[in-house]
Image 1 (cartoon, rainbow, N blue to C red):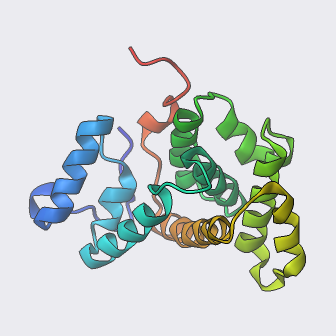
Image 2 (cartoon, helix red, strand yellow; image 1 turned 135 degrees about the vertical axis):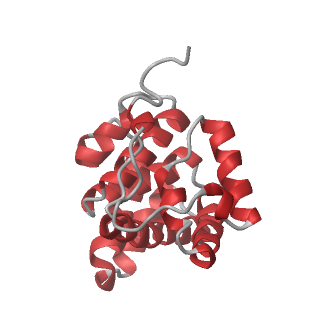
Image 3 (cartoon, rainbow, N blue to C red; image 1 turned 90 degrees about the horizontal axis):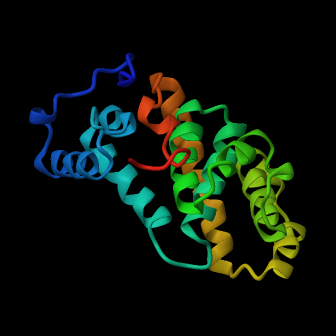
Length: 192
């Protein structure tokens, strides 16, 4: 198993507040391991709660973007931000949600050449602009999304996911967070 970030010690599970410990144990039960992001962010419990509250509000809701498309945004923008943890971890989730073992690698390396729809390409174009050049967003960017049927809420979601994961990418990079080894094969090989 890959060790969590070394720059800040991961607290022992039995020292965590009940709500955080319960969440970590539920994740471990579902996935078979505790992702290092949970262990790293548990170092600061109040921020852990705020981080995962906003994460869940963005990533786990129903709406005009599929859960796979939400993960696509994370993978593309995290690759641009050079966040190894998020590319690998969310790449695994993208492969599972898209039921496609190739898509995460394609999106991480160059989404413009990935096997995605024109709608998804427009979504990622906008997400990348929010992530890297948000001060230049204009009515033209919104106009480019219109033919693809994105609602105002969808556009907000694209932007909010991009912005939230810019925060996440920076936290992962500054803490030295490493992806768990388990992520690398998830969604690539059939479960046994």
